[in-house]
Image (cartoon, rainbow, N blue to C red; front, side, top):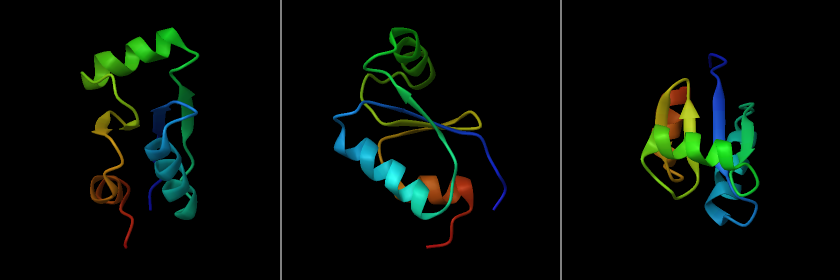
Length: 81
């Protein structure tokens, strides 16, 4: 699996954000976790990228995935289930 740049826009209380991060950790994918609850600039960036206010928003080298879409994440990161 190629090392792709992965960012997760999340909040500390979001259960789907936690599941997304756990999934990536299980597959040894390193990622940058961006807390949009405490970083207004990052929240604005997330909305501009995704058109969404909801989290998680996953940015895999510019490919935006909204929500914990395991199939889309696996496809983008070449994770074999």
